Amino acid sequence: MILTNLSRASAPAKVVLFGEHFVVYGSPAILGSIDRRIRVSAQIIRPPQIIIRSDTGFSASFTVNKLDECETNMSEAQKFTYPLYFATHEVIRGSLNAKVKLGVEIDIHSDIPYGIGLGSSAASCVATVAAVGSLFLKRDRHWIFTRAHRAERLIHKSSSGGDCYVSTFGGLIYYVTNGKNRRIKTRRSVSLILVNTGIKHSTKALVSLVENFRNQNTSLFDDLANSATHICDQAALALTEDNPVKLGRLMSRNHRLLETLGVSTVETDNLVRYCLDSGAYGAKLTGAGGGGSVIALVPDECKTEFEYKLLKKYSYQCIPVQIKSYGLLKY
Ligand code: PMV
Image (tube, rainbow, N blue to C red; front, side):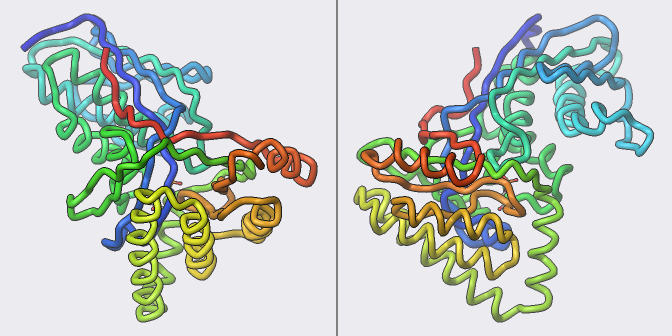
């Protein structure tokens, strides 16, 4: 076992291009890691504590000796960082003899906006497990993914694992929960415009809304899931063939499925329509929905005008995002 004093890791945010929600029930999804990252540094400290600090100003501390329960009397910072504590505790307990009394201090720096569908929670779990894991042993990506996903499941227990997977391995991924994932190769990097409605969502609440929908409309849900699978397969082809017109049409079709599921909002539907009227090949909500963000595929030559139109009509923030192949990086 190595015992390094300080280790660092960074993990990317993601966008779901196709298949969100249906992926929880075994359909495929297409996700891509993007050029926004979370950076985590971890260092060994003498007091047997786990201290988690972020550049947003919060700080939480927990015990190492036993796993603290997530209780209602915890501070907001403790509740918020609980999955990171859980993951760190698991890594320490799996690496150190219980008699060794050491702790870990974790510092988080993020340029991923929180709660808008970019997978900031998953990226923070991945980077934390990687940074803490490297304090003790060299770990492979699969080891990191498994633990990060376990921690993310504390946030919403039926998580498909897609966010953690793409944040760990990076690139454009055709993701299926049965593990038969594959990388989609494209001739050039895919770039999208992400429009943030500013309405924060709870993935957990939206996943449970879909669960209720499925329980009450079994055969309709199965039809929608079949369509979502077909859209993903076609989209994987369109990405490989570099066919933006087809890709855009598929995005808009995918959005309509999400609308039927009830995870979209009036604002999001209007925004998707406005994106199409403003020159996008296609647009859809990305991630859990309930506000959050819309992604639009816009011809390069229309991007400036597109952003101008959006800013003029709404005051929504437009974030250009590019799919990048870098997943987790350790240094
Ligand atoms: O939390 P978000 O907005 O990144 O969405 C996650 C995607 C879902 O398909 C809704 C849930 C999942 O676990 O795949």
